[in-house]
Length: 189
Image (cartoon, rainbow, N blue to C red; front, side, top):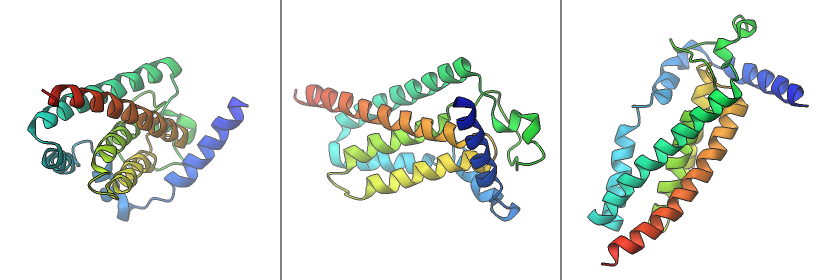
């Protein structure tokens, strides 16, 4: 059953990956770059500051740092534990896939880009939802776009993406709950 699932995963990867074209490569390389969205992060921090104040902003910064560290480290535990080669590292796929980036990495289950972006989307989206109703949906779309970019450039299978997004959503929600408690305690003084 697992072998069949992995076979479907590979077929879906090849289908999605081969939808790409050189015309779009630079766009997806930008989306997949971890530093591309720094202006977005700064803007989101500004919105959090505007709605929650300076004391809470400090808590947000600390908690987001802890959340990203947590998702990154757990992602690495899974990658080392499962040792599933990235598609770009599978010689049998080399002739049938598009490899757009100049690095591959060894293991890919599950995607750190997907888990980190989804954790941020859920976390910030839940805090801003009372003030900006649709921002969570925009952030979820952004996270899904970042996740898809990993398939486009050839470094993750769809299952890597799905599991990364799921773990990121759970992590974002967990850190949201923890932060709400911390803000209530630290700002009630």
